[in-house]
Length: 166
View (cartoon, rainbow, N blue to C red):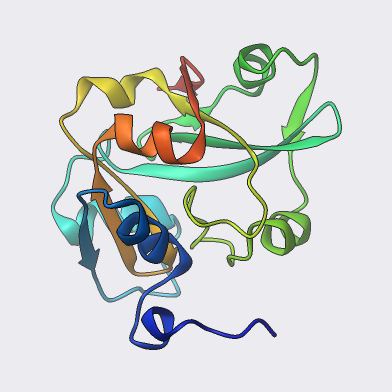
């Protein structure tokens, strides 16, 4: 098991530690996670009182054999064909959950696009740019981080593309 930094021991996650280290403005929002909730993202939007089009879920897909992160609004779904196209690939499928957890260092429902164990190609749905800030997982179920979409893209090396479906 990896040794936790002092900041992580004090309640931070790799995502919040990365944001702090980069000097990026962000706000952490915590809520009581219900393990019976059918959708982690919709639960977060409701608990935080934020529109579901401003709360984004982090999905891991396999594009031509390479794991790729897709960040899309919880109000919709991921268009796998559009994701493949956005990264110059031919075929995309959802990644095996165990591989996604192992590679990112996070558990399903708490995968953050930030502070991942291994940096993966990342695509953020273009709709993120229409909001002053968006919310993404802070690396734990029941914990979201709010930040500017441009900062998310800068820190993850992401590109913006229309990869979400309503």
